[in-house]
Length: 288
Ligand SMILES: *[C@@H]1O[C@H](CO)[C@@H](O)[C@H](O)[C@H]1NC(C)=O
Ligand SMILES: *[C@@H]1O[C@H](CO)[C@@H](O)[C@H](O)[C@H]1NC(C)=O
Ligand SMILES: *[C@@H]1O[C@H](CO)[C@@H](O)[C@H](O)[C@H]1NC(C)=O
Ligand SMILES: *[C@@H]1O[C@H](CO)[C@@H](O)[C@H](O)[C@H]1NC(C)=O
Image 1: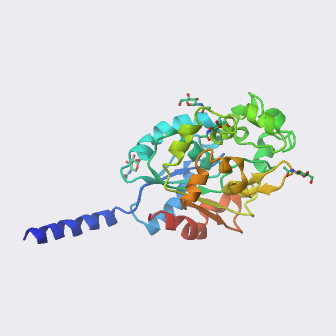
Image 2 (image 1 turned 180 degrees about the vertical axis):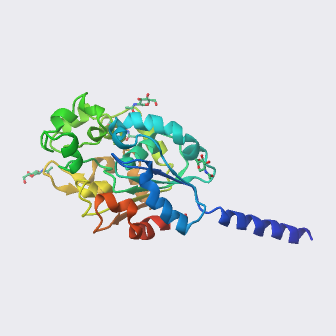
Image 3 (image 1 turned 90 degrees about the horizontal axis):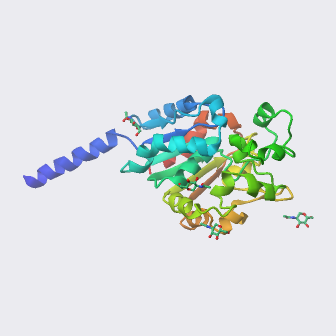
């Protein structure tokens, strides 16, 4: 009798878990976009796993998205602290473009309980390219000379400048960059150990990007590759921050917890809208 009852309880609980779907998802949008950027993704998730809680961070929308990265992260971390730190079973984080660096900041400063971090075409190793965003905001500059503004106190008031990495201006980059250089411990920040400890709480890092992106430059930055001083792209494994394990990337890799997808044929603004990208490269990581 008692055994039967326990069996009944256990089947009942299993059913409830399935009905409630998978781990909650938190999404962060890209530059000049807004929380509704998650709408196509929300649709795909709802179809695949009905009832899943998808929270799109509703902050720094549209032109607000160009304020400094730490300003954004310090506000957003309080908005998401409860879901990122206190979810008993963890959450999956999907972040697009600049949002991927916001999320990396969150993963560095919060003692989080994030399961998988899915970084979608995000310039994780920095950006150095003449793109439509640069032309729109800084029409009088080219990639070769915009460092003259970006690597100043005034320039650092722009989010793009916080991850602008001119490979020919390493000294100025280290002197002035307030964000990416700190996360990568390029500037020997006293917070490096905290960033690393927090980052390594992550279960898995999934990076998606590709050669037809057209905005992230070099596109390999979506996989932690970047230019050397000769404009040759050097892969993640040869980057200083990897070799010195500055924020845990090498440890994560040795654990077998980095998954890199090179996806051709997808332009920058289409990643989150593309069903194939969802089905093949995002969906499999949501059931973990
Ligand atoms: C989804 O998650 C957010 C953040 O944890 C929470 O505020 C919200 O109530 C949840 N929604 C549902 C329907 O459970
Ligand atoms: C280091 O962490 C402290 C405390 O969280 C913070 O006030 C400071 O701004 C951080 N510095 C950097 C460079 O991140
Ligand atoms: C750049 O190219 C020059 C000439 O080919 C070479 O001497 C130098 O070592 C290269 N620098 C890097 C960082 O690869
Ligand atoms: C950060 O860089 C400094 C100076 O190179 C080094 O002493 C420190 O160990 C580094 N921290 C981490 C976590 O790699």
